[in-house]
Image (cartoon, rainbow, N blue to C red):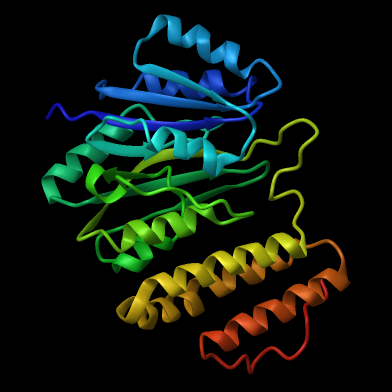
Length: 289
């Protein structure tokens, strides 16, 4: 088993965190990696930190672009990778030492196109686990905790794809395009990714601030996913949206600060429910949290 894994790492103003991220990648027990870091026009010392690592390890490649957003940064790497498998890593997160070895082994053992493993999300006062198993249907394995970073993709399901420039939810739309290409997705129970809920100085993270506009963008990305699911996916997808996505969106709605904005978001949610042929009969008024 000597397949190369391409790890795509977009970075923007992450001088305090990218060193730990790259260290976790370079210390992987599976060593046949290429690490494609795309500096998205950082105004701090992110580039200098990456260059320090690059001089010590030739597996790192650095691309520098003007600030264009995470989708554009990832697209640069998607046009440049040479691996047999592809995964993604955010520049302030950590990948456990054996993660890629575990996922690659599972990929060859099960002949799957996509491998997904447990994601550990660390917030200020809590830890949330997203766990997967092979008794789950393919929709759940794809869209439960829809992150790219706890998944390993065979080259054939990624090659030629590009991220769409959206205000939110690029991962969901990209995962949907991969879903339509995937013959088999397999799950492992081991933790393969640690998501650090960092807050950049001067820039609030999504879990600290949430707006009605951002809520609308998240709904819009699920609408794109529904259009792409086509006949089979749409029937199954609607059930998944009702059972999993709608409760998640409702939780996100509660993060919106003002009551007026909550009411607007609530109307957006009701409209989305009508689109998926579900009557919202049990909730007749907006939340007042």
